[in-house]
Image 1 (tube, one colour):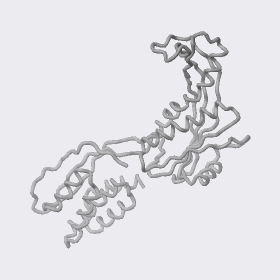
Image 2: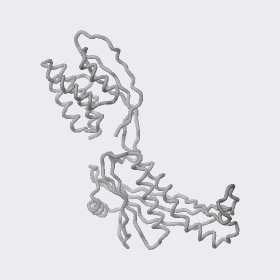
Image 3: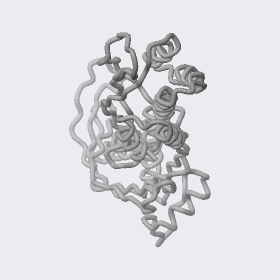
Image 4: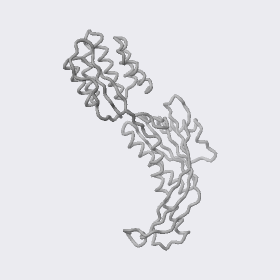
Length: 309
């Protein structure tokens, strides 16, 4: 999936007598997340471990839900995200590659994220404050709980050539809200805070997912064209980001006996394949273009395709 910003023309629409002209397009391209993890086009499994602590399990489930939801919103339909619950086994080391490979195979996914069981600190609850518009007498006051927790997240990408488990972790603070009539003692308030803790996991999961979302970068790409209706029509479709439509026209232009024109059409097809996310096909078309008549801008495109393969 790609999104595009405003188109910038750096080539004038002028008639040329011999060689091709260049049309520069500025686009915003999707790149891997700041962690280096790339989820585009992959099946993703998000697994949370369930232990004996019901509150920890509920928090972990909510955290996995928020994490998966946030990834789905960022990557869209090109990336499928499934959520799985797994019982935590005593003595198991989920940071080991073989552990995550087994989960990967069981879920049929390309990449797996595993949330280990959480460790909580001591819960503290602040004093009650009056609610401006209470829904009932029993919810006319609100207090905020505070509890530190430590989480660990393991990630294994079966499609990554590095073939290793990446581990992430840290300590954060959960702040559940507790509604009451303002008369609860500390024991009751603390118990309510623990019961309300699970919903805080969603926000935690959404926040963690930020590190795995795509990064977007502005890049410039060149389209080459000749004077002529079909060349202009293809370029017009490229302006509208209709890469498939433009590619159909460039395919028609391959019938020429002019090696330079054929090389230009093949180069443009390579750019279109790249924009559509088919990097292997983009490389094949660029190879054909180089074979016909290598363009000066070919090497720059080749480097970009290599970086994506």
